[in-house]
Amino acid sequence: MTDEQLWKAALGQLELKVSQGNFLTWFKSTKIQHRQGGKVVIETPSAFTFEWLSKKYKMPILETLQGLDASIINIDFTISSATARQRVLKKNFRVMAHKVAKKAPTEIIGEGNKPAVAPIADSQAQRLAKTLNPKYVFDTYVVGPSNEMAHAACRAVASKPGEAYNPLFIYGGVGLGKTHLLQAVGNEILKNTPSARVLYASSEKFINEFVQSIKERRTQAFKQYYREVDVLIIDDVQFMAGKGKTQEELFHTFNALHSQNIQVILSSDRSPRAIPTLEERLRSRLSGGMIADIKQPDYETRLAIISSKAEKLGSTIDDESLAYIAKNIQKNVRELEGALNRVIAHCELSNSKASLEYTKKILEGILEQSNQKTIDSKSVLEVVSLYYNMSLDDLCGKSRKKEIVRPRQIAMYLLRKENRVSFPTIGDYFGGRDHTTAMHACEKIEKLLEHDEELLQELNFIRERLYA
Ligand code: ADP
Ligand code: MG
Image 1 (cartoon, helix red, strand yellow):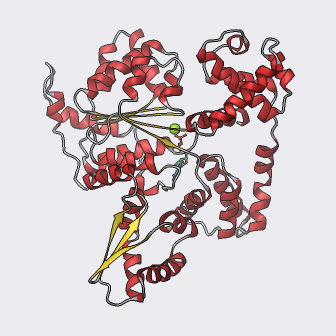
Image 2 (cartoon, protein in one colour):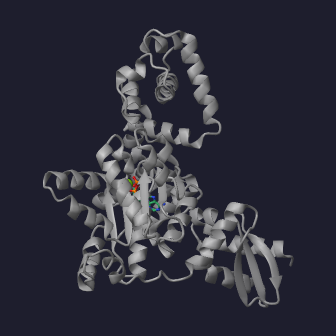
Image 3 (tube, helix red, strand yellow):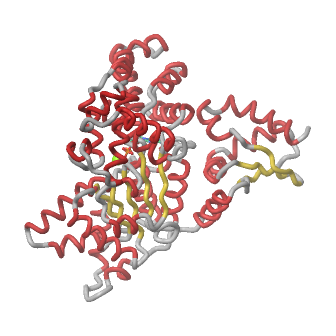
């Protein structure tokens, strides 16, 4: 048997052993790189498949191969060295094997003129740990092409906080798994180093506590709380847009932590570049480390996600129903989970077994809603102006400033695409502009969308809000 034949036969058997989603996600584009003695080396397309296969599927693969060729005694995995990016990741995964260096609490506490009191640090670690939801761990996070980069970066940071990438910035639309990933990093670090002080806070919490501390004249305590940590995680920083004072505080907090190599992790619903009114120096600080995005999951990943959720819930929902849900609920993972839960709940309540027919009936309402919902032109203008943090007057007005022209063109594009408004009418909405201006705007955005992924995400996000 040639290597190729052997692997083809093995895949044929493995396909029956794992779910379709997992099979497509993990085994696609793998091959036998070479064989040496009794050892087979399997080449994987990326660092994340490498990691996943070696961790989760080593035994099943080895057993399958042994069943086909008894002379095989061991297997190993390697990453295809095709691209530079993969090489970088590969390096990180090697590094990941090392345990997180345990930082003595006194090392940090003892700095400056504060007393070094280890027991306080310990109880603080426990208190801070409560800011994390223990259900958000790497084990339950399904990885696919849409989130592999973000996941790999988070893994690397979890294994070497402060060293791999600092800061780490994760962005992506609503319900795509940012909070889950961020907290998984925190939980993983705590698992490796229980005394680590991991502080997770939403931006809203950060803003509120900051404002409160000013009112009550205890900004010093606020600063201490956010700076005496080993890892700081701030979720949804887009909410800081326009909040000058809070941004300044975050900037100083960031500098204080970064200069001591303390890990900072941030998330946002869009790239730092696309957060208007984010102060330039903060923007450049946040962009200084690693930036990774999460996109909408493809069908295979969606299927893998709900299959694993269904399994965890002990549900016996049939494969056809799962496939139907994954095919039809595409927007984000939160809705996907919602649909699954709905089907499971209906089945339990009515004491019936899920079937494709039944699932279709249950989801009918939801699907119709999301497909048929129409939006009016006014909401398009409102959502766009809200998203880019500007007034409706500015959006529709005469200014030719770049920060305003871009959102205006996006609004025109959406009016055309989503509402099928005629070009002359669009011109009217924007202070009686000529219809050619509207046409030009739509062409421009269309052209940009061909290669600008960030813009695509911005648009998806605006659409999400429009139809929410
Ligand atoms: P975001 O913070 O981006 O809005 P969340 O992290 O809150 O999204 O995710 C929404 C829900 O979807 C959570 O229950 C989360 O566990 C789940 N989820 C998202 N992505 C994944 C994934 N890749 N694998 C498993 N569950 C996921
Ligand atoms: Mg979130």
